[in-house]
Image: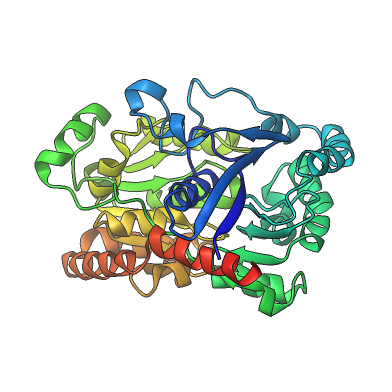
Length: 394
């Protein structure tokens, strides 16, 4: 039986990070999947022709970055404006479901897939991808308007959802523990790294290293939006405890846009940068991001909570050893290939950073294990398992 799929395309806009990357990788494989007879895109009450076209253009044509952080060209969207106004959230949640449902009418035989949590009123079968439950577990990590939005919409969305996909088993268990959905209606399907993330030769690294002013193998990298959940402040505190010679020889590079409630962290970063042992890069061109990963001596990702933690796998696929947290999904995603630390213990983190940066034997072992772990995860596998969920509903 051929499948008729409607894919919510709200997140298909530059820069492609997190949920946008997930939606993009799923969409472009569904377009050529032999079991999908028709794939249509729906976003904010509108039917879209081909939202992938602009995103697949070379960087010189669309200027979109792949690294976290807003592009200078990125326009404010309805969703970003909602994040700042609790009143706007309430109005949006009251008015849009009826309109979206009206626009989706007449598609009872289709399967609607919401890659970004929320399923609108829909008369056919629906799939929702839930990436994490941070708004429930750690509401302090988000603006109040975003917490309000998910609190108001997730419950009704799940009531309309036939099956939930989570991006890790950890999130699946969180949903089961909170009785948000019966276990047999939740499937964990892990994400993967793009093929662009791979080991680089010195010749491949050189253009990016020159463009970014870095030395290959001589920096420790963090990639992600600078916000409380990412734990960047403790990472900086831990790095400051390293021997001065190690910090100067191998500075900490933080690549990511300015997120919510991050003013104090940016002030600390500015101080460390002035002292010569930290580099902050708010925007990385798409051309240089894979080399930025591959050129790092270590990827440090001590986040407090993740649904998946894509930078962990992107670093491993690049042949870069990884240090990450021993909490939420991160041990599951790392699969035994990373150094795990208590993200709340600055001294524990500092000791682990020193060992990871200075131990050549550990580096070689972590590199080999990381490449094997990343190779076991692929977007093709992710989409095959997603199509299996569609098939079950059809």
